[in-house]
Length: 224
Image (cartoon, rainbow, N blue to C red):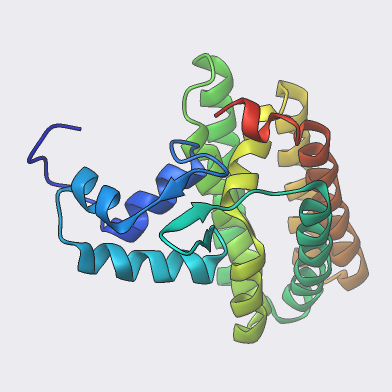
């Protein structure tokens, strides 16, 4: 970063993205002073950003400064197990409450996900951000269709973005394509209002992601 460069993202978004992509890796200590100097802004917005990131669970406090959160295998299991419960319930509620608009948004999000996967596979692993973004839109469409703000509140605190980002990084071509197919199964179950099928498909989808992250969890520190 050049001296005097203006950061277009707000401090919260900038630091969060740096954590997600591994620029600030697990166990890295962050201070208001160092971050303010790096972003060329005052410490007040940095302090506010840190409070948001603490609430997100992406960092943990120290006596002076904060540290980027590290995840144990037990953490990963608990996070994904809770996601499985909450997201599978969201899928069953979506199957019951979805509108035609919900279905259209869901379908378009999954088609965008497939295009992002195709670009990623064709351009030598470029475009991982697009895969993550379109995947999030598909899952968010399900949550919107469920029409439950309390469920959204809790899920937003359970979905740990650095783990999601890394999980896509480790997927093979076949696994990425399978993920799109699973999305289709979930979509069709919701479309046809098959509550239990939607619930089961989404739960298995999350468990597969959990197992994938656990398989590669030893790389969380090594790849930083």
